[in-house]
Image (cartoon, rainbow, N blue to C red; front, side, top):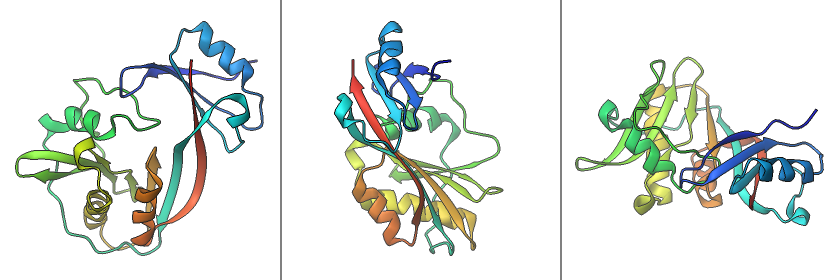
Length: 197
């Protein structure tokens, strides 16, 4: 039985295969990906894959703040702006796939937006029941740590007092540090690895 490959399209339009590994040799996964004609292979594993020709990428980090930092509320992102903002905010970041033009906001979540006038610069999805924040996304021209922090603080304002979990995919180390500076501590990490095929 082989390792399951998820085939999709990266946020930049490349065909990508994605798999989770523990201690397995990735050569079978590489062969499977080539059979599918993919351009990129993403692996989720804490094992060092550099000896197999993979480049290290910013992977997955779950962080937690036991006490939510105080933040300024942000407006709800307009539904008509959701798909485009989602696509642009995560473009080029590891682990993020292409967003369909007709994608709608989740009905069981609040989606806050960061704006420059009428132009959306960022997006953050908040699940109140789970007290979970999906990693803030910022459009490439505005990817400063302060904008990531503003989005996270806006999500905290939407959730109110209490503990908060934060899921991050593909964020740079300085963005993770900005979250840590707000009181979020990593509780789970899985390294990302990438290979061009």
